[in-house]
Structures are given as C-alpha cells and as structure tokens.
Length: 229
Image 1 (cartoon, rainbow, N blue to C red):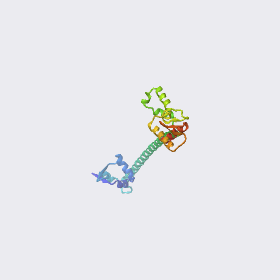
Image 2 (tube, rainbow, N blue to C red; image 1 turned 180 degrees about the horizontal axis):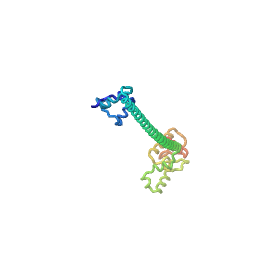
Image 3 (tube, rainbow, N blue to C red; image 1 turned 45 degrees about the vertical axis):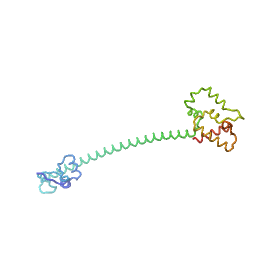
Image 4 (tube, rainbow, N blue to C red; image 1 turned 120 degrees about the horizontal axis):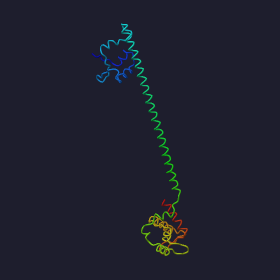
C-alpha cells in the first residue's frame, strides 16, 4: 500500500531542502500524486517505515538512514548545480539578445538622423533659391500655344509692343516674359490696376489697356512672384 506525505514533511524526514524535493518530483525521480490540487509524495508503507530519522533506535536502520541522507544531499547538490548552470546559460542568452537589439536600434537611429538631415538641407536650399522666370514660363505653356507658328507669335508681339516713350503694354510684357498661367497674369494685372489708381510713376492708361515702364514692369513681376510664394 502507498502512503501520501507532504513535500515539506518528506524534506524534513529525509533531511533535505523542500526545493530539492520539488526538483525530484519535476524530474520524475520521486513518485508523486495530485490530490485536490495539492502535490503529495507517494511512499510505500514499507519504505516509510524504513525512513526513520537519524538518532532513532536500531544501529543498522540508523546507518542505512545516514547513507540515504548523504545520497539525498548529494543529489540535492547536483540538482542545485544544474539549476545554477541553466540560469547562467539563460542569463547569457538574454544578455546577448539585448546587446543585439541595442545595436540594431543604434543603426536605425543613425539612418533616421541621416535622412532627416538630408531633408532639412533640401528644404533650406529650396527656400533660399529664387524661382527662375524660364521655369515658370515652361510650366505655363499649353498645347494650344505650342501649335501656333513662332512667326505668328512674333508678329503679335510686335503689334502689341509700342515704343511710346519706352513704355510697353501689360499684355506685351506678359508675352515677352512667357507668362501664360492665368492666375499669375491676373495677379500682375491686379497689381498694375492698383498702381494706376494710386497714380504711381512709371504706369499710365492706354487705349488697349495699361502701359508700363520697363522698371515698373519688372517690379510688378517681382512683387507678384513674392506674393505667390
């Protein structure tokens, strides 16, 4: 028949630690049984009777118990050593993994820093660089205007350009500068009308519109482009 004993009682009876008892149960070196959610050590009645603590009656039984105790302690020491070795290996693996992750994070931050620095430099350069008139004219061309013969365009420009005290009509100036985008043309026209209403120098009414001096026309274009940005 079997006898159930608590692990703590078994440890006290055998003179070993409770951790050693649980370690033996886990490795299958010590029979156990789960009763009502609690673990018990299974001992045969004969074996339980023989496991008498040191100092009990009977020299032969006492000698056998001493031998068992020594064997149990050696086994406990071996179990503890193995546990410590496993913990060391686990700690080494964790340390190695953490170091690898730290190196990866350093590399990622370095790449992000380089990318952001390049973007900031690009934005600063873009803000400092003026917009060339040739680029504006190229973006504002339409397919219909490209189909018009260059000779016809030159003739229209010549008709619109009038040498009147060095003044030039607003339409002729816009054509010479290659400005064809409606929004920009409208902005320059509004600025010209505003200057005309205020009676500014270098601008006067014309039969077919507004006439500008070259300096006034250049200033209006510069002002319109700044307002656009």
